[in-house]
Image (cartoon, rainbow, N blue to C red; front, side):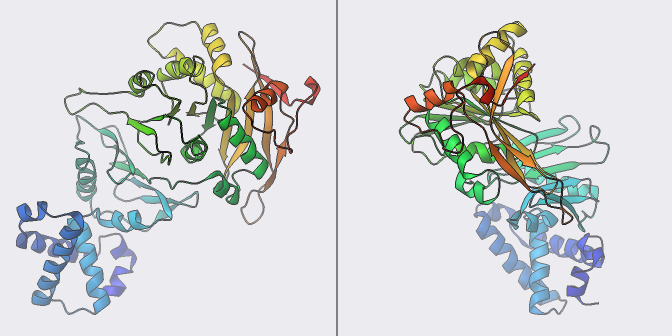
Length: 445
């Protein structure tokens, strides 16, 4: 069987066939012939070029005799093993792959177009997987071992990486790489079916009029993508501070300060939390604060900032509905080290949050805004939400697609007045409610 045929065979794609040994053999020969000290002084591109050139000489000298295509494939595989991330290297170069999930050495999954699929790829051994993981985490000066079995970090190239190994993981070492999301405008998201044009005009008006907006959704629903698109509507003259665990937002305005939390070092010291950054940002004269995700006590600081002069702030939260988002914010705020009664937190949310934008990921992989809800309650009143827009989904079609339509409701008078005072029109598709009966309101706990 030719090398090309073997490369395309299941055994070779898993890295455990005959050529798996061939790659390992040439990798060892390559490492014998290079000067590691000299290599460390080169840029990544120069390092790869040097390794390819040296390996080409080795193959010419020692064989085997290969066609041009076979030779290029072998060189690529060996250099990927020696320098890159082995079988993961082509996946990182594939723009259609948004997430890479390695569940032990025998199972590699990717997400493409919102759908998860398993690939016919395997690591040669658990040791090879651990070597790849160690190579990844070393680029961010982290280590992973039994005493430090979990790592969450952002690579210099932007990808978010999470690692968990035995004894915490019973399926072997698990590696998850989330690709840096491409920046989309709201107009582009319309083309993807994530919202319609009237909703775009409404969201643009709400951002310009400095409404405090919470983007809510489950994992993988596109919260960061939408938050980035909404942030792009903030006027250029404003000072914006972004706060994230892993810096993903890509704002284009000239006056943006990007802050990123920091995990503890190997001695367990030096940790800087989202809460620390939110508190510090209040001393930096922000016009807007954008928090990538609130997931703990920092939500209290964020709510206080929203209700004490920092209007127009944006944040995301993990929740499955607009009602759940309010409950989640209240629960997270109670995790603060400040003892505040639940009733007081309820009042704080009523005064701080103006809008909740709910995102949902459907069975066909499509991500859509399923509701824009306006918080109409005040003080100690029960949460009362007025739906401004929603997506009504139809049953899945035989071809596996989920279709539906966007429905628009009249805006509360208070919201319309605030838009008017900010010089923002009420989109014609919505209009203004003149009576309470015209509002699509509901109470939430």
